[in-house]
Image (cartoon, rainbow, N blue to C red; front, side, top):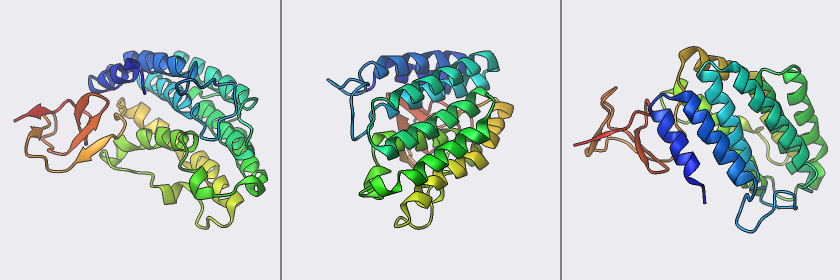
Length: 252
């Protein structure tokens, strides 16, 4: 279960209070990193990779600071997240999981505008190719919390420029052939290297970050967005938001 900090963060996003959202996401990350799942230590092997969720929160915090114009704090989160992701390689024992942590480290480089962004993604790509022989089921692997978290962070950033829709589907993030495991996974890092920095620039220049996508419904007659008039709803944490612009919905 998530702590209340994530719900506070989503509420701050809806209110366009992006530095406050960054603070709440930072608290959510640190709170959950101490115990990624009930009874689970972050320093023990975990085939599901629950540490991905707090890493996702920390990355989102950095994006919030970028959007808020607090590049100094985004850089701090970038350095912090890179260090945490690298340290967690001592805990997760599957080569593909460690490659995903390299992917996260590259994301933190981009979020913090650190030196060596391209090189960090290339290292993740190489790690995925090297891990190919250790993967039994690539479909199962990419639906674990670790891999989903790394994908969901990108999808949240991409939602705003895409009018709230899913801008990065699963088939775009991965390679075309699941049987070619190394290339299939390495495509994640290559796709992000090509797209993530420009997406970050778009949301930063636009001064807005969408809330994460939760449970959605189109053309709901019970709600209307006071900002854009949409009746498409996004329920996330305990908030009822506009699917299009993340404004709290009015009931009618």
